[in-house]
Amino acid sequence: EGDELDLLENYDKIIRVYNTLPLQMRKVISQITDEMGNGMADYVARDLRNGTVDQKDFSKYCHIVAGTVGDGLTRLFAASGLESEDLIEKVELWDSMGEFLQRTNIIRDYLEDFEDGRAFWPESVWKQYTEGSSLGELKDPAAIAKGAS
Figure 1 (cartoon, rainbow, N blue to C red):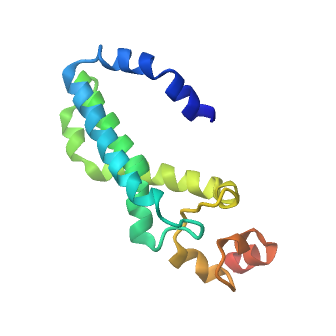
Figure 2 (spheres, one colour; figure 1 turned 60 degrees about the vertical axis):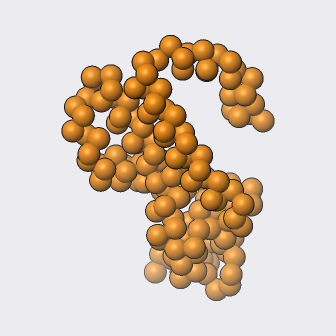
């Protein structure tokens, strides 16, 4: 449904454009897509109703869904000559930016994700601000007050 359906319906156009790209760019896109797909496969079967387990798991998730995008874009810009290849080695720059953006999305979409039966905020963090065992408690104004204190 939505964007995913649009992607599938236009897959032939995407492949046609992809095949016109220089070989180095196609390699980057293939490698990043492979890394992201394999990484996401680790999370698809998991019960994420109450978030990732801890900060390490959360950071891994953020790297998979956003750090890989930063990696891919950095390598694509370098392959195009628009940026220096030195940037590829500056993992802390593109990975931390990706993680920052993903964390922002997760915070922004917390309630919508929770209502859809998934969450990503680390259980080891949010449990500090709830009385029970449900991330959904954070939508209660009392939990907001506890978190702010």
